[in-house]
Every structure is written in C-alpha cells, then in structure tokens.
Length: 171
Ligand code: S3P
Image (cartoon, rainbow, N blue to C red; front, side):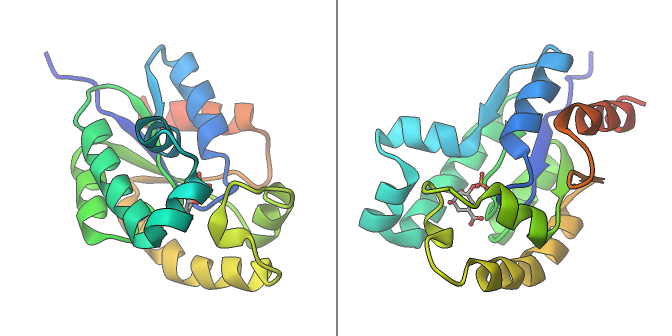
C-alpha cells in the first residue's frame, strides 16, 4: 500500500503555519510537528538564545538537520520556519518528501500578526517593515518554486484555509 504523503507547510513569519498545521493535522487525523518547536525542545533553549549564541548560521544548521529528520516520517503534517526555503538542500528535501503547501500572506498582514512578537530575532528592530519587504522579495519566488499548492491566508480565518487545503490535497 502506498504511504500517505507528508503535508509540509512553508511560508513567511505570521502566515499561520503553526495554527493551520495543528488544525489540518487534527482534521486529517495525522500527527503534527512544528520545526521551530522541535529545534527548541532538542536544544533546550528558545530561538532568540540560539541566534544569540550560535548566530543565524548555527540556527540554520539546526533547521536543516530538523527538516531532514521530520521529513523522513510518513503521513505527518509539518510546519517549517519562514527561512526553511533559503537553502537549496532544504528545498530539495521538502519537494522530494511531501506535498508542499505555500501559505501566502501580505507584508501588511505579517506586520499585524507579528507586532508584539519577541520570539523572532530577525524582527526585533525598528525597521521591521523594510526587513519583511526585503524578505518577501527574496523568499516569495523560493516558496513558489518549492510548493505544489499555494493558499492565501490573509483574507480568511484558519478554518477556511484548512478546508481549502483539504479540498486541494485530497482530490
Ligand atoms: C525565521 C522564521 C521563524 C524562525 C526563525 C527564523 C525566518 O519561524 O524559524 O525566527 O527566517 O523567517 P516562523 O516562520 O514560524 O516565525
């Protein structure tokens, strides 16, 4: 029997990957893994600490390792971090080991959803909007090139997004 493909959520900070991932997994009775959450559990420290002590490069190494581990599972739902598509190696693993869903959102929505956030080191600066716009320019083409399906999350709630994903990946 053919194993169920993994469902892998990619997209920028504040797109709703964790919330939608959890709901999607519950809806389809699958296990859910959040890459950032697993990295923190493994390391015994939070993401700001990892960036502080090991730098972004140290975090990215841990992220690649975690993507490798999580995507070796079968039939699970995985939420990745917003920078997961930056490395070619990661993009290849994501593409080969699951159905990849790009949760698209606008920079305006990201600004609203991450306004009070203290857990994302890349956004702890006064020019958050410029940072997010720059990231969008670099990453949106990478998300699109990696994804099998793109779903907007800026104009409707998580439930509606989950229903849309279910309809598109199970038909
Ligand atoms: C990052 C996104 C974060 C986290 C880290 C770096 C990024 O994940 O992995 O702070 O480079 O966009 P979320 O997308 O879940 O916030």
